[in-house]
Image (cartoon, rainbow, N blue to C red; front, side):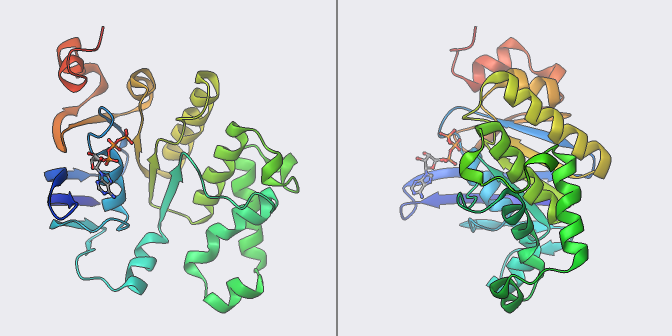
Length: 248
Ligand SMILES: Nc1ncnc2c1ncn2[C@@H]1O[C@H](COP(=O)(O)OP(=O)(O)OP(=O)(O)O)[C@@H](O)[C@H]1O
């Protein structure tokens, strides 16, 4: 479903090797957590998958479509099927929960319809369904600026769900949340993943969260894969390699 073939990303005219010759495949049914120290290349890796970051060399293939040489318009079509959840979800604070969530339909609509804010009944119902899935149906008219951090992340997830994605990518989606809220968000992502068989790939700092929820863990170090396996295979030795012996 998702293939990275010898993908490398260099920043600053080649000075910074953010990721190095990564070759990985991800299939339907996988819930992948990506671990690694700060600067290991996790965000760059996630951004390559949805085409925000173009590889310096190598190729990303999604559902048999190579992102190489796609025009921006074609890339938008690919991206419209990929739900992104960030630490900052770039929601519009003064708009309501519902108004933010329905923007998840934008990628698959004509630009003029987005400008006019004309939505079909199906799009409205899809947004309401997504809001029920994240248990925000009672807050649909609340402005996003009046929500807690956990509620904001749930709005971000609902907006991603409205896209009817086959992939959900998360770049540190729980980094700013306390542990019990983080667990709730991960439980929600796990439930959605299981119900809809969405390939889910999430960067996370918290190793315990990764071990609890992932079906597969990929660890990066200096832009290279140093572990790729089941959570149960993540031994103390491996952890020490990932985190330079700072793990206890
Ligand atoms: N736009 C950029 N220009 C130059 N260097 C960059 C850029 N973005 C990232 N880097 C560098 O590339 C490397 C990988 O960065 P990346 O953000 O992918 O790591 P990360 O594992 O996500 O880190 P963190 O956990 O701190 O978010 C780092 O050395 C970083 O400083």
